[in-house]
Image (cartoon, rainbow, N blue to C red; front, side, top):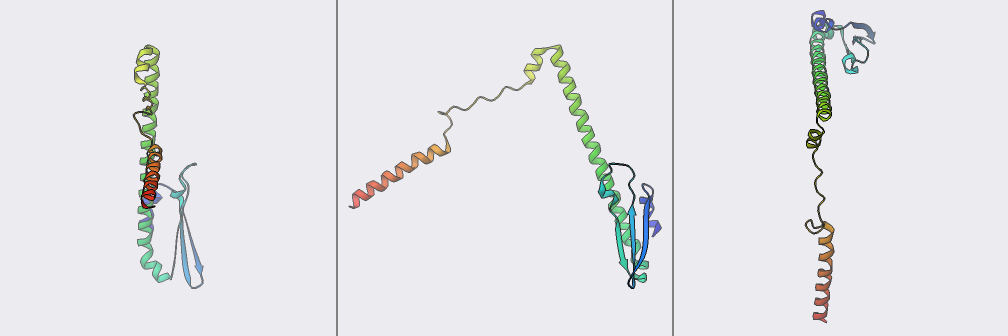
Length: 151
């Protein structure tokens, strides 16, 4: 049991409780927070209940998979945080460079700004509703002509 917990014990303190529930034994492993503001998923406890014989034979495997999942989650969160920090740093650097360039040469700043696309004119872009309005009178006119022809 403790061999399986060692990788997790390198990073944080674990609280282990053992209790008897009816004729079974419940083992809880609760990871402690390492620092304030840490993701709550890293402090998710595991609770296993079974007979003493079952826990003797299977608890090690359950704890090993729990520790593996916990470490993988910690690594994923650390990678995501590092990527977000790098992106934020790059964005701050880009803003700083743009501000310096605009102070040095106002014409350069205006070139960097993309012009707004021209507004489409009514003549070149047909409206979806205009097509329906044009189609309805034609249909009505055709119906009236057919009605007159059959009368």
